[in-house]
Image (cartoon, rainbow, N blue to C red; front, side, top):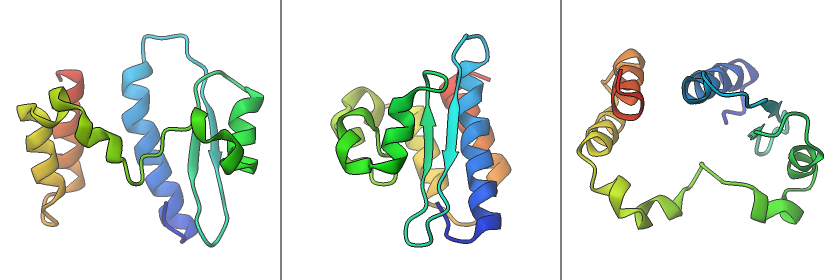
Amino acid sequence: MPADERNRNLVAGLWLYLLTAFLRRTMVELQVIIERRADKPRLIIGFNGSSPATLVAALSPDTSADRVIALFDPEWIEDQAEIVNDYGVAKLSSYLAQPHVSLEQAVSTFREVFLGE
């Protein structure tokens, strides 16, 4: 997450927009925590309502590493052949690597690849 508060909130909003598209027809309750630490702010999302585990992940990240999926450097994604070799994911990845691609195009491609829209 960006250190600047304005940009941090905008990025958090984008992540929530992308995530909630998957959850539209579910009964999942989200718990959203946007850390404001200057050194390394994080967006923490829990999927069990107001579970204490999500709060523990925010307050003591080292003690809850087994319950957290880190997206800032997702090395585990490269081990998922069905994702890495997917045409749509490759297309989205190539778009995201190009700085001139608009956010609107990137989001549209994300929705096409993952939601079939």
